[in-house]
Length: 116
Image (cartoon, rainbow, N blue to C red):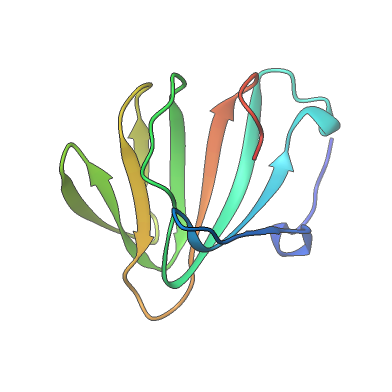
C-alpha cells in the first residue's frame, strides 16, 4: 500500500510548441507495482494547455481543481472541479486552462503506454 499527498510528488515541467505550462507527475505506476494502470497528476497553469493528440488507449480524468475546457470532436466543452471525463481510444483531445488559478486533474491510463 502507498499513501501520500499528491502535492509531495516531484513533477516534470512540460513546455514546448505543442504543450504550455504543464506539470506532470506519476502518482501510481510501474515503480509502485501497479501492473494494470497508471495514475498521473497534471497541473496546467493559467493560459496553459496539453497537446492536441490521440492514442490507442482510453483514459479517465477527474478534475480536482480549477476551470478549463476539453477539446472533443471539434468543439470545446467547459469543465471545472468535480468534472469527470472519459476519453475513448483514438479520440482526439486536448485540455486547456481557462480559469485564473491552476487546473489540476488526475488521469488514469492502462499499463503499457508511456507513463509520462
